[in-house]
Image 1 (cartoon, rainbow, N blue to C red):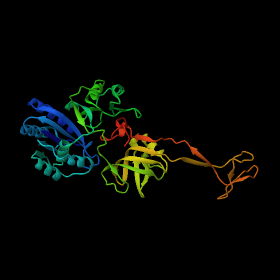
Image 2 (image 1 turned 90 degrees about the vertical axis):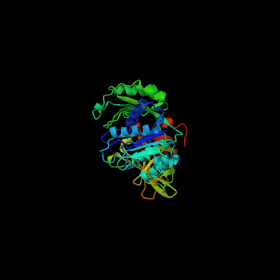
Image 3 (image 1 turned 45 degrees about the horizontal axis):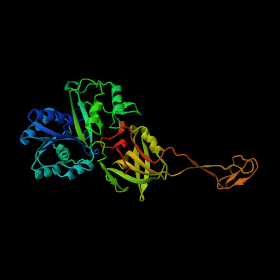
Image 4 (image 1 turned 180 degrees about the vertical axis):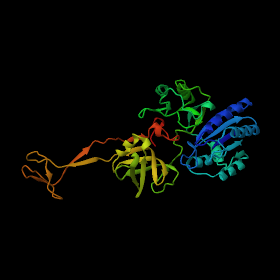
Length: 407
């Protein structure tokens, strides 16, 4: 059977993955056999999500009634039920729901009634607390199909430590990265000298290491030194897969969806208030504003280096009339041309303007010339993929080290 859980946390604490890890241990203690534990990220643009919009799916063998009882008890014991917007959902099903529902929850928007209809058709046991919005993620998680997948080891704090500053030996995370990258990623951000995988929120997570295999993340974990951990669990995930991205067309993008879009740069990038950078893109007569926000740090320099006429594939979430960039594939570069006054053919001196539309004149000998000297300057950017730094990367975004071929 499959057990799905979602929406048990809030901005002030708790974590659905932690609840899943606790449930695993409670089920095993009652004789259940765990086949697989999945951490499933859903549409990152959903306005009512909490933090990373993660749901949990557990595949287990055992009595469905007992599994449902234990899952519900776990929610009652651990979920942040008093928090506004926290609406947990628990599902136990002996049939997988249609994968189409997972794809919709991953890239678009769903309502609890849709999940309930699917669960009724599957003969599933389910319960929603408060508004029951968590039934969406719980259903989508057990419906998930992962042609591409990654792994994460999540290490949790003892409950008595929640909310206090995390005690970590910073340099050991850099050692873990040096020993296991590129089989692991987003443990640290070298460019910004930051440990990425240990959060600052008041939830149970001490740190999490992502990688290509359970062996890679487990190996990286051995290098890390922190306060004593309370619990840890390895999950199969859809993180780092670009599963949220759709192929899009400029002028036809829907708010709250994430796209890859082809186009031509139609103007120079502009840096606005707060260091946010905007870039205009054009395709088929329609315009698109692309945004690289301040947290993307050095990635903004890539955006600033693009010039009108450059061709690119841009990837990100479409919100508020802008595509918020996650990565860029530069596919063609326009020449960067500069005009200088020509040199005088008689005396070799640089000419000066003779006036508007009057060409150029040598102040030394009076020689005149009509056209400027055109120079082709070396570009500061080349064709290829560029991505935001690890500290600004979304959970679902595929890092370039995983992209073994271009789209």
